[in-house]
Image (cartoon, rainbow, N blue to C red; front, side):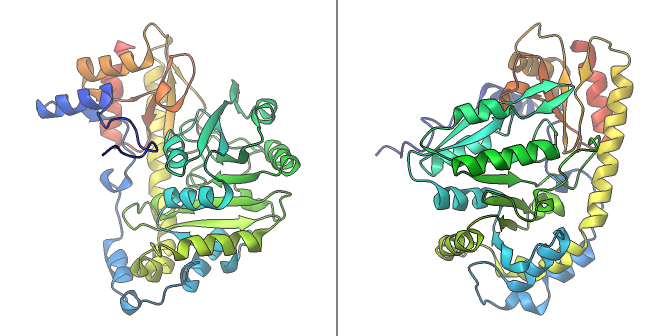
Length: 385
């Protein structure tokens, strides 16, 4: 019996994944410079406090609320500030689930969303699984990345329902400027579109310009419907404790929350224990974020020192987030280059084309990598570029 057309035609690993599996099966010591799981990066977690939060008496109670437990929503609202209220929020099991709910809320099968690229490839599949299409609209680079508002407007069709932006972007790290924000919300308002803003990396500013939009929550009354997504995975470096949230603002906010609550009520997927523990877990976030920011800065400094010996190589600015884009002479395609680095140096990086970066001259590395492994990876791979 065939699968739904929402699924891929096959489940074979891509060429780079297959090569990685082969290298590991051969016992090779592969330095993974793509790691994005903070629980595997050597950070000092306050284990006693986390265990205590998850063993409090409240974790045994089950009193489901489609919007999520009020105590957890109050903790999220207090964490973010900017006038956010518990009643403005809906809890999800993850930001990916949040996208699924929003696509169900906003679009019918056959509709589309617009996603400025480069961007994370997950959006294509999250949209496709809901029977809609994610259409990429290229951004452009001039000293920093910029939204192409003209291209976005030209891409709007009668079936366009929303625009998705990531602030700061993954993997480019660029924040929206405040000017871009106002132009983007005006564009969405003129065309009757919703705006989905993924802010999972917003706590990790590095080389951010002064005109950055630190968070969409700075705008208390946007002219279009705005849905801001985040979660414990990045905010508190706890991806295993599945808790995300959607903040809703703009015209029709109450009706949108009512629709989201109806959808969430069909699943009730957020576990009671993580909701009960949320206030304590969010209180731990500043300490974990400080460790991560120190790691990001240390690895970025190590990269700059290493690049000084390789003038043909450079990196793009890292306004925020956990990734850095390396720029190299495009003597071969970026996937071929990543394969070559894996085979010759036992170093894993992402090809830029994985994120729709243009031109074949970009590689993507994670600044979350343990510092010693990051430096060794640079020593191994930079001479080969």
